[in-house]
Image (tube, rainbow, N blue to C red):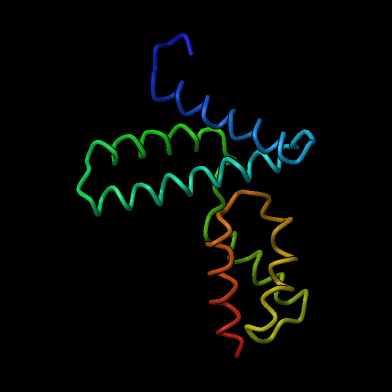
Length: 136
């Protein structure tokens, strides 16, 4: 905060406020997984805002959102490579005996604890759908 980086200061304060608000709402202290999920949600919100800013040709908002995403990603675990995610999903499909897209819930339940916030939930579900569709 003393470095004078206003974007970083604003983004960290926003993230801390979101954590504090979630703790107040749930009346409990958040664990590391919950804080990671909260930061991922904030990144997702910024990405959506980024897309809207691009559609509106607002370069100032595009730059702000990109800078905030970069700061937030520093607090997230290193992203899981696609190949590793694919291997985990394939192992979960074999483990659960899933054979159709209707078994997606079972596979997701097996994969989510292993991924532990290192991949976005929408990427995980897309990978599960893709691999289950190939099973059919």
